[in-house]
Amino acid sequence: KAGVTQTPRYLIKTRGQQVTLSCSPISGHRSVSWYQQTPGQGLQFLFEYFSETQRNKGNFPGRFSGRQFSNSRSEMNVSTLELGDSALYLCASSLVQEGTEAFFGQGTRLTVV
Amino acid sequence: AQKVTQAQTEISVVEKEDVTLDCVYETRDTTYYLFWYKQPPSGELVFLIRRNSFDEQNEISGRYSWNFQKSTSSFNFTITASQVVDSAVYFCALSENTGTASKLTFGTGTRLQVTL
Image (cartoon, rainbow over all chains, first blue to last red; front, side, top):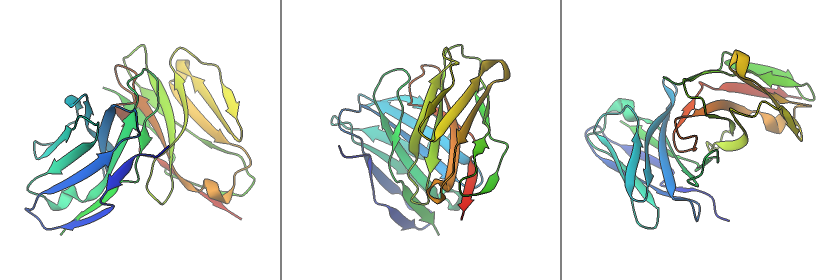
């Protein structure tokens, strides 16, 4: 069974640009969550999508957005990139079932220069 | 607000030693789930164990064991007979509200270095 796949693995962007990251969940998993990991702030929840709807949202500015497609694949977009957006972005998928664990992808390492 | 504290920033042990990673949490929810994840250098978070708030029975799974104590809001994780491959950053996490894994609050992580 394939795991969570995130593309691309690495990205270098310039301040002010926008970026789109992609996540393909484990087959059968309909919940997809996104996390940002930085040395200073650690792992922080961005948002979660289920059935193409955003169900939960973390405390991030509106420059961070996402969407989910009918096949449960998800994308997140960051507009007007800032240097502080440099981070490892992790996607996780899970069953919509209480107590189940989330499975994470290897992440996309975004560097903003 | 939910909070997870991992006071140990870094631990170094020699192979075959036992090591315990500490985790203290705060939540107002009566139903919640706690998790331990491992992050090797490759970056992927690997699920290790979970425990729900109604089950304080401590268990052993291979070289892993955990000690969940609601009275002290602690969820400690022990690796017995550590191996070099155990070297990684370990995160304790708490689920919010619904108890699903869709929104986790993580601790700051404990870096474990196992040497020969």
